[in-house]
Image (tube, rainbow, N blue to C red; front, side):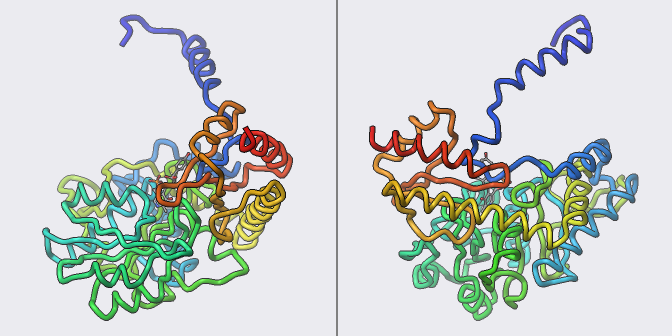
Length: 376
Ligand code: 0PR
């Protein structure tokens, strides 16, 4: 740290200069985040210094968080759901599995997740000392049920299904997983970090949320398709006991017990999420998701015109394109200032997410570069 103070203007100049090194969203096909809705930014600013870690000092924002949980519960088929606004999908997944493990009361357990699970589940295995068993995928890149079945045993504390996989945007057969979970009395967690704000607004309907009786918990991220500011995640439990299984005593705070993973946590995330959900309503979200799906269809049609096929017919606004040497193609595209990512082996492909910051004009430009790059 410096010894002497630096004038504010000077600091701001450094910040601006450094900020200019960041890339711009309009060239991003690789991100599940997007530009926050303007009302989210206003709400975020308004609640910047609030701390939900000590909610007795900020009962106003604590009330907003409760309303967010209530609205998310309604959206996901369980109006009385318990939960809280977390920092994102990783925290929500950690906490869901931690609750399941604590409820099961065993420390030497395992969890069964699809091979397509987000890497947060590898962190979970390490943190919670659980064995992470990965079930194979079927030809549609959904988890294979017989593979799941073969991995379950008496030490399984949780099963995971994904509603909107990170790489393919695919939805696992949640009802069938729920059947297995119910039969064995195992906690079923649904990771809808991405799909949670997509699936309710698609014309095509899936059975994946709390309307499926054995679904015990859901991760849903406002900072992905919820148009909120970062860091805003959501964790919901069907039963309040699960949330209780996460509580620790907080001896000297305004509230005697705390279920969140972090202590100090920004109320800005809850305010921002609340503002967007109230302002847009289902109608606004349907429009935004419709826009992203329209972009998805446009991209896939354009890719097909230049002879490039998707790995699966897109279910939501995530597309995996089959190209030769995807790693090289990605590098070439990055040189042309396009940011795309890749899926894992054995289904290596170019991965694109069509978020609300994308436009058809930029898709046209991108497809031209993609064509040139693939021919190279
Ligand atoms: N579950 C699923 C299904 C996810 O897709 C993700 C993240 C998570 C959990 C973890 O969420 P947090 O990152 O909020 O903890 N999916 C994106 C990914 O890893 C996150 C992301 C967002 C990555 C923006 C890059 C980026 O630029 O691809």
